[in-house]
Image 1 (spheres, rainbow, N blue to C red):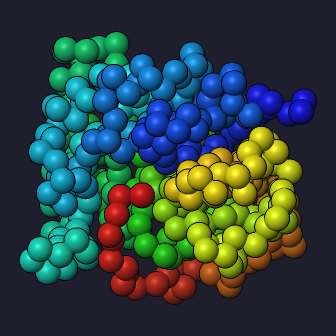
Image 2: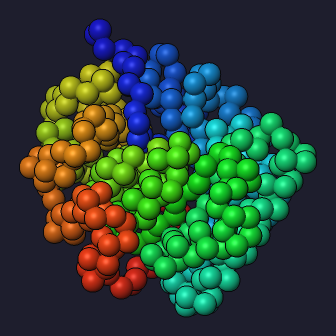
Length: 380
């Protein structure tokens, strides 16, 4: 077909897809091998769902960028018994490209036995952040003494459920080690963990991390950014990498990106009413596979294969936005994408922060911040 193994260009800010190793191994569905229809050597796996033996079977290329979570949230959920040391050892065993500190988010169970979590009080949350910093420093010391070759990959995870708690991370770090010494303890960079549905909070946190770390040449990753709008905010603020399970949802609930407008999903796609008689998209994955034939034999395989269709279109959006001169970013986005009022405010904040400075922009926009009402159900 002449379209096999398309090389995705290097991006300043890039999307890291959350994926299942079982799909790659069991169904031979990947995007990092030379035999794949396109080459995008980036992936994030749940730390507890992958083994060293899996890594061998996945056939990663030399330029593979592999991330995992730290396992901290799974401990809170009662899904594993990792600790600060075993979390490090597991990430090292998998040869993760970045090693994340063992963090616990500042949340508690909604009810006994519930799998939903709600925010703690500010005092309780600060205590969690202090514990996270102490654990991260203990891990940094252990790496330096026992596995110094991996220290340069080590990153602190900063839990940032609010502006005040984002800044509290910096205060605690400054008190314990001095922010000017941050890279001595965490030379791999820093991870932004910001949950909820407040786009302005994401924009404020991302902008602050850009000023404090990106502009000083340090790596920044944003965990579980979810929606396309949050992805755009990360790119606007030049966050190095950011992950999301959006593309993976094709396998979970037949969530298929619309090839004409990837911000939307194709409706009326289900196991019992697949509407297409022939190819509906010319992306490399859709050119390679015949979905009608797949559906006749295994409708589960359709959901897993469509992940690569979704990922292709997510990457295309990433490439487009990453190519923009940031001074044109807001106007271009508003003119060419579906833009909610909240997204307009988030982008306007970034532009005003460039003009007025971070603190003055926060003072101007803080009244638009939403009260935290979200309940965290999952890690990504």
